[in-house]
Image: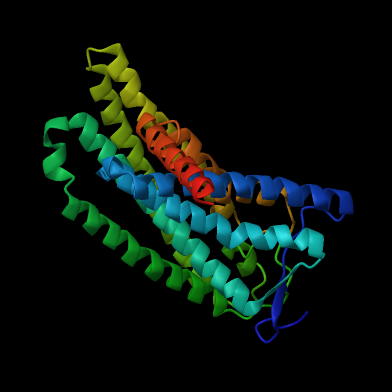
Length: 316
């Protein structure tokens, strides 16, 4: 066994040793990455180009899309490159960077999901006070708080993980995941990061309970809406949100709260895909793109692009 703190790389886990399945993994991940990339970019473009979307709800959707785009871009390109290049290695510094930015993006993502729950609660339970509560200044303050907490949180986890001495460089995951890195530790220092993880899981579950309570209050308010159409419209913005949060928290907790085991399990890979790829890929479609206002904004963008091409052809 080697002390990999003094070496230059880690070896990531492949989905299969069979060449045909490796190529399949590449194309499946490429398709998923393209879907996540396209969906979140469309949300970002729609928000930036349409002034009518500059409201708190769409502002936080825009922030969520940026974080989702970042989180999948940190892990998936490297995992895809392993198959065609037949190279599992990632440099030590690359692994550090991957851990830091992934935790930063996923923490920011979760923070915005909590803020969006508050936004929906105010919009549905206190609609008359919405403009007074969800002001531009309040939205900026929430954004700043999220962007201050997330890097601090990422620094704590990254330093808590890489202060360890590693006895192996074989990471049993398709990206540098903190629990899998801690399994490689040779010293008791890893218990510091285990403590950080335990605290993080408690905070995440507390936020999840807060979101559930928030949506119970929202559903109670929706039931009192006399219009059936109004009820459906209110629930259409809440159910997808709760679904995304549930997938993220449940699968993430499974991966990070599981007792350490030397036995490699396909569940580790499966749940990592569930919490790291599925929410960023599905968010734009179940929470944003089906929204009428965003569809109209994207139609305007497409029309503007088409008009520009037409004018360019006429000039040429």
